[in-house]
Image (cartoon, rainbow, N blue to C red; front, side, top):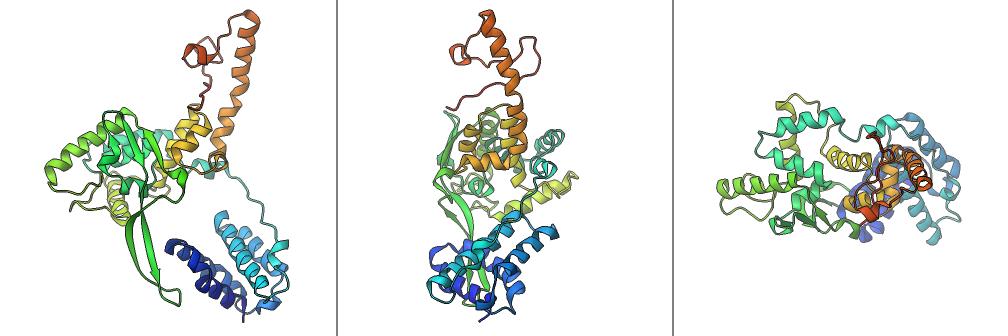
Length: 354
C-alpha cells in the first residue's frame, strides 16, 4: 500500500467520522492535490522524514502555496501516520522529525488584506445609490461580520433601539461525497458558528443601523411576505454565497473596480485594521472579530499592531512629563482619551477593554 492510498483511506474510513463535510472536503483536497501526487510511488513502510521534509520545503520554495496549505499537508500526514503507528502498520511516525519551513512575513501582503484608505471612500460613494449592495457593504465594513454570518442574520437579531446586532449563526456550504471522495452535491444551510467565540453581540455604529433601517423599509414594501433573513434574495428567501458573490461582482464591474484583491473578506480585514489604526485595544478587536484567541488577532494584523505599539513610547513620555509637573490625570478618571501631546499633534490613545 502506497502512502497516498493509505492516507486517503484513513481520511475516508476514520477521520470522516469526527469532522464536518466541509472539513472533509479540505482533507480530500490536501490528499488529492499534494500528498497523493508526491507519494504515490512510495510504499507506506518506506516513507521517511526526508521525503516529507523535501515535500514541505519544495512547496515553500515554489512560492505558490499559502502557509496554511503547507501546514495542512504536514498536519494531515502527522495524524494519518500517527494512526498507522497505533494500528501497528509503522514502527514510528516520520513526521515527528519534520520542521515546518519558516514563514516569511511580507508586510505588503498583509496590507493587501485591507482595502486601501483612498479606496474605501470610493467604494462607499459608488454604493450610495445602490439599494441592495449599500447596506451589505456598510454592514460588512463597519461590523466585521463574516460573509456567512451576514447571510444568516435575521431581523430578530437586530435591535434598532439599542443599536446592537447579535451574531449566533452562519450560512455554511455543506458538500456531500461518495465513497471515492468525489463531491456529489453541495447545499447551503444555516448552522452554528465554527467556534463559541464567534457568538457575540456587536454595538453597531449609526451608519449601520440607519442603513439597515432603510433597507428594511425597502424590503417590507418590495417583498411582502419575505423571510426573516435580513439580506434575503429577490425571491424573499435565504441568499446564498454564490448569490452574494455574483451581486458583488456585478457591483464592481458597474463601477470599474478591479476585482483582484477586493474580495468580500477584505471588508472584514479592513474593519479590524481601522480599529487598530485608531488605537483600539487588540483584545477588544479580538472579541468583535469573534477570534478564539488573541494570538490570531495579533498574528493576522501584526503590521498594524506594531505601528500602534510604536506610539506607546510617545504616550509614556507624555505621562512622564505630566507626572513630574503635577498635571497627570489618568484617562479613566477623566473619561476622555489621553493624548501623548498637548499641542494638538498626532498621538495614540489608550483604549481599555470593556
